[in-house]
Image (cartoon, rainbow, N blue to C red):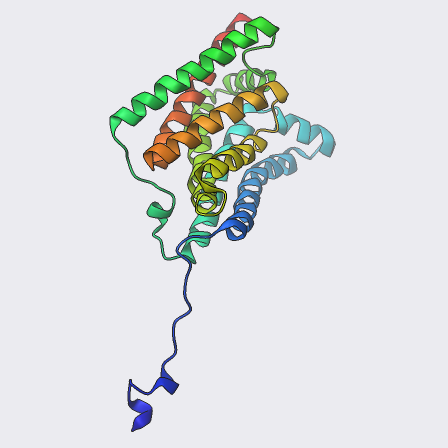
Length: 258
């Protein structure tokens, strides 16, 4: 009967311990996995469009048409969202933290939203002034061309959903949610996590030149600080969405002038 005795240590099997959070290498490797999922989700749409248009034209022409299509790019951005959420859910599944808690999906006092918005306007105003001083365009040609394409397809609403909702949610969950959470609890600390996650986030915007890279990086630092200050990723999602909405409105205006 000793074999049925719960006090018999030989029969007590301890459940494997789960991490409270992923630390540096765990966060980095799972981050690579989440990035790959985001890429696959987005490129799947482009691949489908290329295969669909493949009849009668070369693959190169089909890829060029898909890459310049506002509708295709919008759908691609939207499809990246469920892909990255699924990857992050899987990563967090192996920890002891609930999904929403791990990614800091909690609201914050309105004071933080006001501070965030004021800082966002100041940064954008600074870069607009710098653009005028150095003679650099205020909105990238990529955005102007994509918007014109989406408008001609009657899919401007889809582009707004993609750029102002899907992109902010997926990118913020990835950078300020997952990467910041893990890296901030290592030797990097909050400051190192803010800088490193901002660099990773900036690298997602390969469609831009060095000038807009610098602007995106500065915005990343501001969003990272707000994530640290407020403990809320919802705050950075909202501000990111407002930033993208402002960029879309500016691009619409610029496209109307050309």
